[in-house]
Image (tube, rainbow, N blue to C red; front, side, top):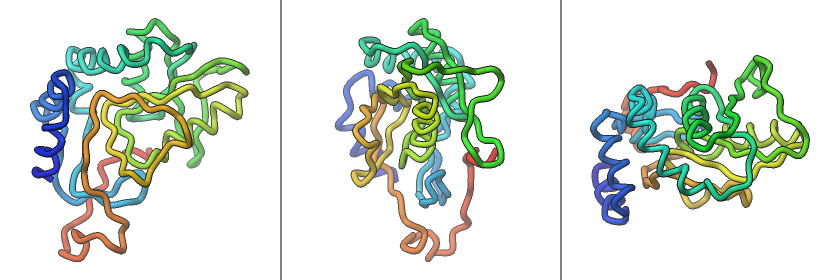
Length: 204
């Protein structure tokens, strides 16, 4: 994983390198054997909660995203619980837009707590990390069921592999990182007998 981060570092601009340094400083880059939300395995995990516990870092990292999406015509930013909640709030604050979150109840993504999206409203989905886009597509489906339009996705870290796309939805990230992912039956870490960790919040 270290070699991949070093390779990624060489391709980053100054502001992106600042974001990577914040991830390192806050201990947000974890190494090990992880089960991701998508069901794939990985030797690295980005725990953005470790960044977002510091409001000053959250502001700084999301300023970079806000700059990239400020031209978009949107009324609402929506993040999936749990990882997208703070991202949605802080990005909404910076852009002066309504911010809300979707959450799972009985395994189904939905709006609760009085959150309402009206037909025709334009929505930016916000995430902490995008790997396969599983949560993103759940929120997209939910938003479109309300008759609203998804005009983009914003995240702190884009760690998608080339085979994953978001079906023509533009993605704006503070940082793009290349980190290994494996289908479970081909995972070398499983073959080595390394314990599998599940640090995510998909089933919370």
